[in-house]
Length: 174
Length: 155
Image (cartoon, rainbow over all chains, first blue to last red; front, side, top):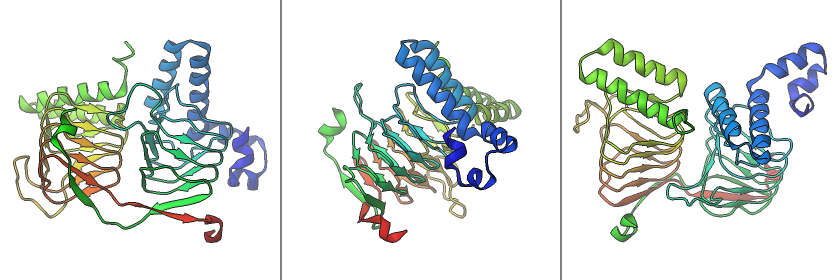
C-alpha cells in the first residue's frame, strides 16, 4: 500500500483502521487499481475485458488511462478527474490534475505518446504531445512540451506570447 | 461494441440527440440530454452549439463547447469553445460565441473565447487562448516552455 506510506496526511495519521479505509475509498487509489487490473488483463491477452475495465475507469473517475499505457511502480495521481495519459512512464510518476500526455492529432498507430523517465512530476495543465522524451527527475508545469526535456530540469511557462504562423496548404492536405 | 461504449462516441451521440431536440423546439428534452452528457461523460456540449459532421472529441472529460463549427472538428482533451462575459457581438454563432470553419484542430488545454471568427484548417496549439480572429490555414502556437536547470535550488 504505497499510498499509505507516500501521502503526507496518511503518514501523519499513522496506519490505523480509519486511515486504511479512507485511503481505500479515495478515487486516487480506486482509479489506479482499475488501471492496474486492466493493464494486467491487457498483458495477459484479454484485450476485451481490459478495454471494458478502462472504460469503467473512465465513466466512474473521468480519467483516461488506456490499457496500453505503461506506468511504473509508485505512480500517484492526486486528482484523477480529467487526466489523459497515453504514454509510458518509469517509476514514481506523479500526475497532477488535468495533465495530458497523448499522441498528436495526426499521430500514427504505433507508440506515438511520450516516454517519461523515473520520478517525473507532471504538474497541473501540462501537455505532452507526440513522442517526446522526458528525462529522469524532471518536473513539468502548466506548459506545452514540444521537444525533449533533459533530466533534472524544471519546465515552466516562459514568455506568455502567442504566435500565429501560416502553414503551407500542402501540409494541410497531406 | 467497444466503439459503442467509447466515451467520446457516447458524448457525440448525446450531443446530437440534444441538438436535434433543441432544433425541434423540445427545450426540456434537449436540456435533459445535455445534463445526461455532463453526468455520464463529463463533456459540457451545449445544445445550442451547432457542430458539423465529423466531430471527434478525444477525451470528453473537461471539454466545454458552445458555438458553431464546420466539418471535421477535432477537440483534444480539455480544450474548449465558449463565450466570454461582456463581449456579446454576434459573428454567426449566437451572441458572444465563437464561429469555427472546417477542419479545425483544438489541441489540449486551449480555448477559443468570445465572438471570434476562426477560419478553415486552423490548428489551435496547446495551452493557447484565442481571443481575436484567426485567418485560414494558420497554426496558433501557445507560450514557449522555459527550462530551469537544477530545480532543487528553487525548492
